[in-house]
Image (cartoon, rainbow, N blue to C red; front, side, top):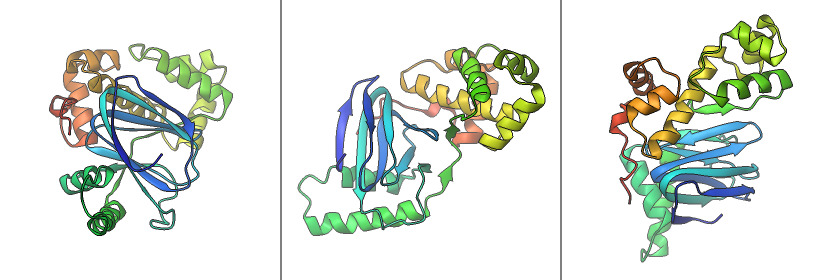
Length: 240
């Protein structure tokens, strides 16, 4: 996929592929989720996703989406060799938008903008918004059971019995494969689902319920701690 800016309808999907360049993807409206064999990364409008060269991946989009991509030779940021969600401050946002759709800018000016963009990407912090993919069949079954209906509050012993693993085994699998406890992973899953629903325009109270939080205020508190703002500040229609 080359450098570009495009409008995509809600529910759009880009099939599994890879590319020879590094790539940053960003949605100035809507939300994008990147899937790989290792896990899932999701980005609302104040986050971007870095995808290194050679990484097989596919995209899903939530809400009407303005989708920006900028590609770079794979040797420009050699320390970023795995997908990552990156915080997008105002300057980085404007650089991505300008470089994805340079219009009539002279090539020399675009190249200078791309270098500043790389500098900003290099220093932008990674965000803990990866949802890892299970490799062990028992852990995969457990994850699927939770993801099927987030309003069901599975205890770890009940989840282990349903997935065919003891509580201690399942605890070990969560820590060993995901480097997370079960509650930490479940929170990540809920946040991923919440970003999707918010991008699709669902009200905050409905999102809180559908993602398994007991109250809207509990959801807002977790969301604020993760993203730095409340879900009510999210504006999926802020298109550029």
